[in-house]
Length: 331
Ligand SMILES: [Zn+2]
Image (cartoon, rainbow, N blue to C red; front, side, top):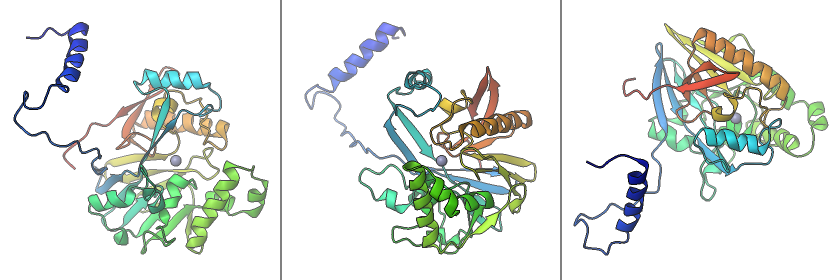
């Protein structure tokens, strides 16, 4: 029996590298399977009471760690936190995770991902919702409601196909009234700073103009669809919205972007992501929301949590900790 210690583990790795250099024919006679180099479709299903939730990933974006990803923490602090989570401290991977809710009478998509255009880019790693819906056996034409949590590209751009048609041709598009009012207000647009904010106003309007601004506006603290109540969680954007989904004994908190990636912001709720429009308000919302889900022991579905984005939040030190829900083969 091989003794397990640091030295045997390190030597084993070296032996593996040497074996790869052994001339053909001296190893196994079995032909190796070519490396596939491609991930499997990303969808995952679970129940909330009588409702069925299908998590459908849009993929993830990986980019070099920006100088100022967190407005009030240094790049070194952020890199340190990544290393603490056994992640590459030089880059960041942000997943995008829409869900489909089947209530039995309604088929609802919550947020859309980046859309078909993103999927067509070279070496695309986002825009996968279409392919993953198909893999999960969900026909986009059968989706009768698309609910948008807030107006950022990873949540709204997938409303459109590449030819600028509604990707869910039979769906009613529902948007938070506060969010709609803000982004469609010409005064707000004229006062918005150049760069990212101006870009967001333009791209949001391009998306909604393509569907002739045909949307249904929904209010906070009311049901958007039977069993799902919209909860105002502003700060990330002025009308940023989360949801409580209830059916029978089942309850789920859908946080949207109350935090970006949990390995940075669940453990450091005081950190302000550069994407948070009002960092202070987003932090107040985050602490209030997490204190509530901890007290209620509510499972949380997070748009930027690692796939499938489902877990429980616990108190840990000055912040919180995400405990991912174990994979379950039983729906
Ligand atoms: Zn987002």
